[in-house]
Image (cartoon, rainbow, N blue to C red; front, side):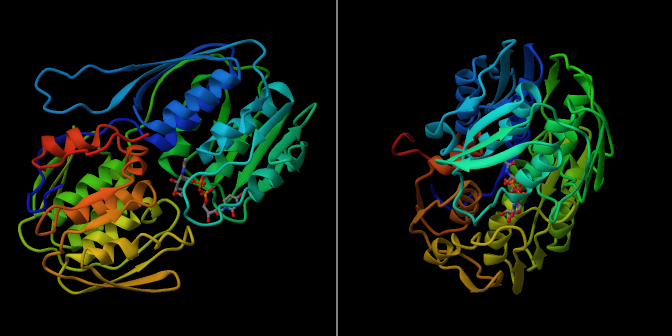
Length: 427
Ligand code: UD1
């Protein structure tokens, strides 16, 4: 990619990866056809499709055609999932190890079948990412969970509603426990639950399927178990992390972008940071416009569970700080190890010092192009944004990581003025 161009024009954001994957898992809770709209055409969705196929479901992905007047695709599509009456209860290691989110079939499978055998996940190299809260919660609901030969095996002839306190508002644990509780006997209360928009999205779909859930989007979610659920057609919530990436990119490059589909309320803190950096942020009916004239001012960022600044946008915040005027302190509170990519950013000339979970970033006017390595999805996107501010051609290697989170990213970057090519196809 060649640095130097400002992001200008319109870009359309499709549904959230972190929601779509869980909505696909939730489909397992009902026999018959679930239709999901605005599902991103990314590797993780195809891995989840394969997970579901091996559980006995039929899954097809139909990519949306380019709409008239669109310069680049949104990268979204429709997924049709046909769930049999008796799905299998075992997920293979070869798929699960490629994507941590496969663990979200655990809750629905135990709820539906009374047993689940799910390989322990791999996923991004961004910290230890334990599963203790998933396991402890399922045990509270009456399941027996053992870890054998690389598999988590959960059995529960009957799940019974209970109260569960999460030590940390874990997104994955909240989702798994809610999906288990919807078919449990009686009422389950999940306290210190995660409040992310993707949790609200999942609960909306479950409610449409016939579940009884209250408090989604707050710290206390109450689920009253029902006997059965029906499949539905449902549209995935727009991806706030992709939207936030575009917004930050527009500010870094002093561009002017309309991020179609962006929901301002899902990005309150990041957008406020951009305003503090000097940007114009304009929520509109079709999304959010972000424009920047001058060099951004450095702003401090602290990652926290929603509604705090999302950890998934932290690499972009570091990239922004690397080209802002002044010094910014970026604090990572959610995932240890998420500053690993900073070594790559330093290769582009950024002035960043790490001390534990803090990064001190002294802004520079320009960065300098170099080959860099994407270490995970968001780090890769952060490096692409930094590459826009370099003086030459930056090569981002292992870009397959970025493909996991950003559908049609290259086409969309080209659509808003960036010269970028893929030199080798991702596997
Ligand atoms: C999800 C998102 C990820 C995002 C993260 C936080 C998906 C597919 N991924 O990940 O992009 O960065 O939310 O917004 O939706 N933890 C435990 N024990 C547990 C569960 C979690 O210690 O049982 C820890 C993790 O190690 C981590 C923190 O809690 O430090 C947050 O994890 P969690 O909120 O569960 O994130 P994920 O659901 O894995």
